[in-house]
Length: 189
Image 1 (tube, rainbow, N blue to C red):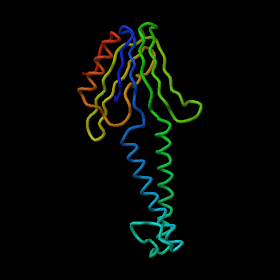
Image 2: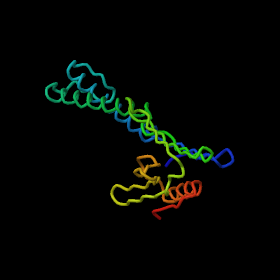
Image 3: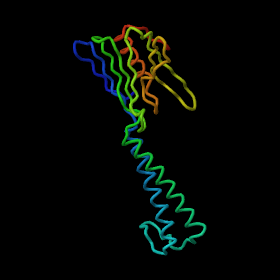
Image 4: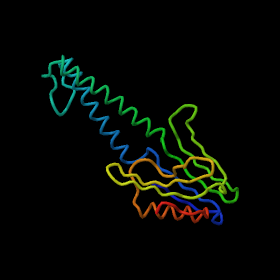
């Protein structure tokens, strides 16, 4: 889940921060795509202007049509992709928190989405409507390990982040801690 769990106020409030798109891997991919796309775009411009704009190689020997033009188009497409990646990181899409408050008898699931009228995704409900905490494990080519909250009258609510699956031990620990806090059964083991 890559969460930091906090229990306070006499064990009546459970707060879990959920990491969104501000992960180290996303920063690395955004930086790599930005550098690669910049190189392609500069190579395309260099072949057109016949001036070397790169340190590593000399693209002035490329014929502008078709090689320089294609490299410029690849560079432009790559820079648009890197802009998207940096904006997703800036907006922290998928980040938020899970909060369970036994004093008020309510839980709140909050996530950031893409800008627009539905940027803030909030689910609020009563704790007494929670039926169970469910662990979902799928192995194979695209493994998934996630925690879900089963609530009366609603679809299962995902509690974990999307992305790299967490370890089985961490998944079981988080699921058991939440089920114990809410006094509901843990399913899926």
